[in-house]
Length: 260
Image (cartoon, rainbow, N blue to C red; front, side):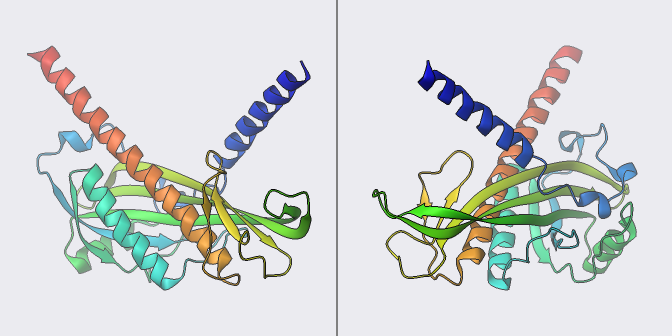
């Protein structure tokens, strides 16, 4: 009975943590696209011309008070290329160019005009916008060394990342499709470096604590944490896009069958 209570407690804790993580960090895309531009009843499957050629705009949002630092430039570029490939596989959208978002700024209730102007400058009728944001929390823990009972004082840092996707139709002045992907990873590191065989270590949350990722350096471990967390968010985003597209195709085929 005691073991059963412990098992139930662990399941409930995991569910609560998962529910809390689903709202961390809070959505940021509303500061870029107003709600009246949100995706409506028209779907990507109903559009006449496919594949759609679009530019990809990556917006790194650190304006929230609890936001984690930006990804390093090299990691940011790699994420952009991964998104370019992943979106192309998941949707009938061909990303022609990753566009710098240097002049894109958050505004109360969003600002469509800055995307319309960017599309005009680059010659795109469609833009894919992905807003990146993340938050972190660090707290002291005791870290076990290997499988022994010896412990070392250290820190645990949780990173929650969010990628918010929107496909913009600049001719119709509205979003055609929206989705999001979230990631969660944890970094454990001792108070002092030097235990290289065990720490620092990054692992995925909440489902894969046994999969360990060792950062190349102690000092660069927080950067590795952010990269890993965003990689998980990117995988979940592209999976959601793929499932949404397949669902649209299935619904469209069913509608044609019903009307025939």
